[in-house]
Length: 532
Image (cartoon, rainbow, N blue to C red):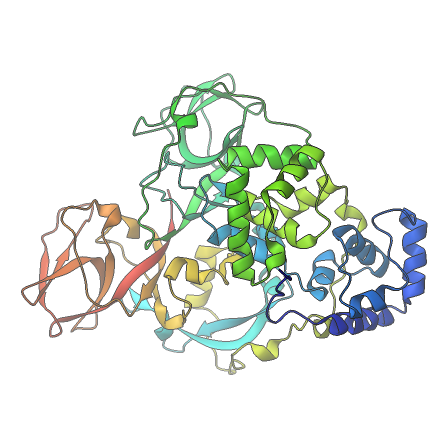
């Protein structure tokens, strides 16, 4: 079966013309580039760039390997990510797929791949946009203005944070942390959170790495470098871990983006439920050893990984992203990385690998490649395709948007293309976001320290399930006749809307005449909230 190319990908002739224009801008000829690659790496090296590159590109017979892209980057001075985009690859697909694909074990997302030069729509305060209620729709607080580059929001602390996706088999933090949640991790654990020996169980959740994977949990510090992940449900075998030989504390979990539609209960795997002996974290690994270890600790068979590659191919609409079980076995046993870059994107996506770590084991040193950004015209990247108007001169200079940015700093721009994962809908707009940061007495525990919620406004029929636990109960936004919004579990009984509070302090159920005293705006499908 012939390969099916990705929709919207550049044609072979377009790629050749674009490469020629980029090299012309740098006053480079293809002959000179070929000669320099020969001098730097040798003609027999995988980095060598042939002098007939344009012909091969136009004929559709050739796609450069990651080594050849690195050579182009070094010779031209342009970034590897930009060159890959010229050839039809977007590294941000890796992070998006890591968020979207189901994962048995917790993974650390590769958020370093966000393009700082990408244009995004931005917002500003409405002149009358101060929140007047504890819960308010963002459309009444913000307006769309001229687009900005992601890099214009960069702060010194932005790159210190890690982001992880909680796996289906990570039950140590449940129900405080749910499978599928994206959590932000602050690595500055020693400066802000003292770890005293023989201390009680920590109030904070930590991201821990050990030989069998990552987990988000509270910990008990035993002394002499020993820690123990705390399991309130006694579902996992208690294991003492030596830091940093057998475990690494990667940081404190301080923010959660929680999808509510999944409603998934975690599963405790047998290999972690039974007593197991900790092993030392590996210091040096080859490419094949890395793939084999990560696949095993992700609790995936070779056939499982191959099936997931088909999901990647369907998502990116290109059959070249599929990887066969035999190829996966060759990568692990023979330590031979794939030449086709499509496979590298697939491996990073399904195994939760960091792209730079993978290419380093392939033998590419990013310290030697170019760092200059390509002009937008070579990458089909412009602000003209982003909706928004220039902000007027009387725009409020300080207000809600500054407050929101401070609460969410650094802004997780890598999630901007993953809203469907949280909302369950491909159509998400500013109207679907509600501010809940001023809700001092929330009617649901998940809204404590809440910041934002996403509301599916098409789900207006409320349901309350008496037999289900609180973490499986749907939450709705309700608009009362007086203009006040509520966020709580509720249901309809004999034409009466009954609100069921689950607050810290006892509160009685509230009743409203449905469609007269109160209306259901929609169901909350995702929550952004701070953690203690």
